[in-house]
Length: 310
Ligand code: RRO
Image 1 (cartoon, rainbow, N blue to C red):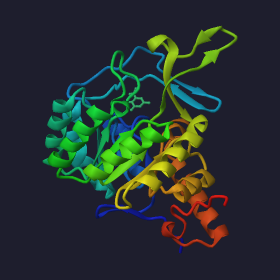
Image 2 (image 1 turned 180 degrees about the vertical axis):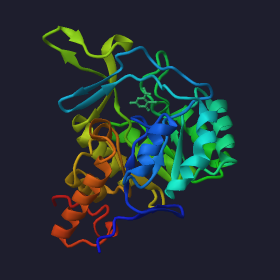
Image 3 (image 1 turned 45 degrees about the vertical axis):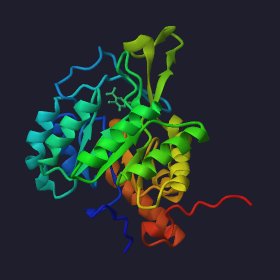
């Protein structure tokens, strides 16, 4: 029997593949569809204190190698997500809230509210690229450290951070030192690559409306950057901080590469948006086929064991 189960701080997942926060996870109907699918967990859309309409449409576009989005955090407000947790528990898989405050106090208020709920895990989003006038917190190391220290003090649930992609080894080292000090249970690498620009050359026009066409890039384009982030943090972080890989996973081979780089669990974003809930079973089965070909029985057999050239 091939075993692709996983675990975060005592929370068991019966496989290692579930949804990324963002696509098709903002309402109870959408979350039920994830519940009925083969996803091993149910991750909710990043929430804010008050409900948000998000940015004007068109704000998401599938493109050949992935997607571009500038959704602008459309969500029902954290109280909605608190209220639906009991209903999502019937699926007997971990339910994960994603929290996106506008400042430290908002993050704290939402963490405290979810502490008193039955949610299993908290993902703290430090990397939304699409709020007009707001920088991505994960690129401000001082503010990140303040928020991460607060999470350590306040969260009573296993918690982790959704990080933006980094591109410079000094930045990886700065963030890793903050993380090793504050000991989150996990990190999620990576959010979309912020402020990309996709052009319809025939129309001579951008493809999404907000911010003059700039938006977060997802899908195949970003897999090498996502793998690099998983790998570099795997090298730098204490081994009890787990890494969840996301960014351009469409196939079992993609999934295999992320685990080889050091990921313990995987999330599907653009591939889920494009293929729908059946993607979870397909990628899980494909990953198992790769493991059979390689003679591996469980994820520990190859997790992090990427070889370098001497
Ligand atoms: O809602 C969004 O625009 C959005 C968010 Br919160 C995020 O974290 N990442 C992204 O690509 N889009």
